[in-house]
Image 1 (cartoon, protein in one colour):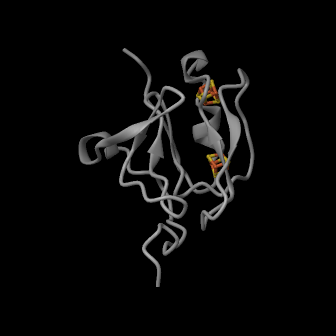
Image 2 (cartoon, rainbow, N blue to C red):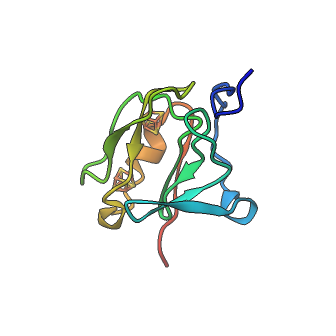
Length: 114
Ligand code: SF4
Ligand code: SF4
């Protein structure tokens, strides 16, 4: 047994749509919020503010965004997948919902500004 973030299993979806009232922002990565708990490499939390993905559920299957919001981020050692769709261009989101609708484990939640 180790205590360095390796003792985790894949988490089943869907993302908790109320996570913002239950989790704390643990930090930011390139300006994008990361909601804890976070214990890398095995536990990565939920990323984003409007375009949010539970990285602990994501199995890195596809990218569906028409405006290129995401880029792949390597996450070696994570039990669900070793890359994740990082919403680096979150501000470009046009709220088409394609990513949320296509996601097999339902780990994407879009929060439309308003
Ligand atoms: S809602 Fe549409 S525009 Fe926004 S990140 Fe998802 S696929 Fe891209
Ligand atoms: S569709 Fe869902 S599981 Fe697949 S890469 Fe995107 S966020 Fe991850």
